[in-house]
Length: 165
Image 1 (cartoon, rainbow, N blue to C red):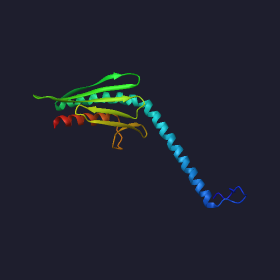
Image 2 (cartoon, rainbow, N blue to C red; image 1 turned 45 degrees about the vertical axis):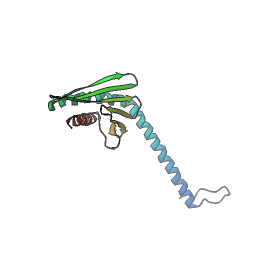
Image 3 (cartoon, rainbow, N blue to C red; image 1 turned 90 degrees about the horizontal axis):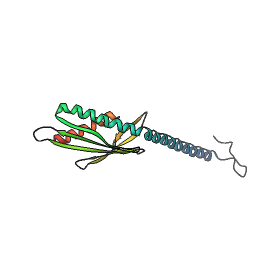
Image 4 (cartoon, rainbow, N blue to C red; image 1 turned 90 degrees about the vertical axis):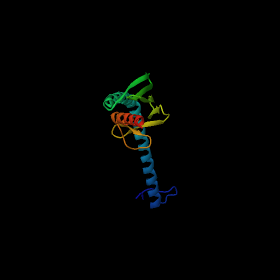
């Protein structure tokens, strides 16, 4: 393979040493490429994250409006939005003679790789950004990508299920 390489004393480098060096160099190149891909992905998340959070809150409102057909009411509102912080509040009410309600607060800081959620019942969870072809979301312990619409559907459905128990 690398039989052209020589030792300091003028002798030829054994073939196995050249092969190991080549493998080490290839491994270093793979690690550098992975680092570059991760860096580019993080830049995309920083750039697209705030819009995805905004889309998520809009889609939550759409889902809550649709849930009215099933006897629910509620709202999805942005509580605070500064240059770097996004906070929203999602409320779902099961209408009837004994109404029940739940809510989930949403927290995101520009540049974070995740969106935090905290429910009225005390449950805390995250949706984590991931980059495939596009920036998507996934549940903490899942590899399945979701867009903002799918994430909103999942969240409102979970809130409605909680109220129906």
